[in-house]
Length: 291
Image 1 (tube, rainbow, N blue to C red):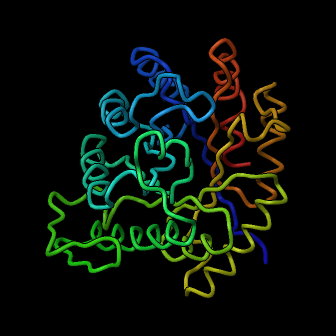
Image 2 (tube, rainbow, N blue to C red):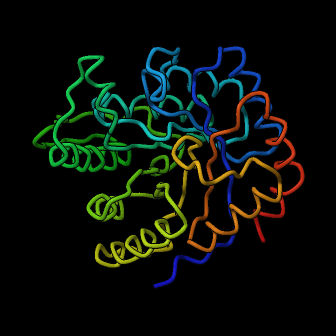
């Protein structure tokens, strides 16, 4: 089965909040001025590669950055379900949807960095329960954010006639970007996602895209209803060097487009190499969006 037809690609930047506030502010404004379509933060309390380093909290920082941007879509890629009750996450997302005038994308993942949970005394259940909690949280978020008043009785989460006021700016709710890699998670995500995000080699992304198509059909959804998104993480894809040049960037996009990717989100190169981000945006992004 072939991936959904791609009519236009989109491109985003995910910055890790280890920069100072002033650096974050200036660089996000610059990325937006360059024309990057979306801007993202990861959801961690410490940097995963260096746990003793500085790290701002994602959602409070995103709220502040939303007041300093005007065009780019915004989100946390992706929020760890183990960090917050889904009702709290929903209220945070609605608040930023209003602050940003409807530019919010709600990214949610199951959670994965066990050392971080242990460091902060957060419960990190075994894989089976982790996935069950995630499934329940996504169901709750979809119902609550799409309605005015919701009662939800789950094994892990409960709502009792909970009001969703004010409602999101976007109707019936802001888009859900759900992170998933394995078969069970892909099947779950196929029921709820507006955007599915993963990462891997072109071969892995092609295989997962096929699994997503098949899961959509099993769950009575049009495969074309789910945008296929990938995150380029520098430390996790050392064999890929899209920031080496504009040609390298175009080659990367072309190979992953052939694997079915429609949205590309990149962690940027180190600060002393940020000029290439501007070159890519000015010289080739407009053509890559529609080619």
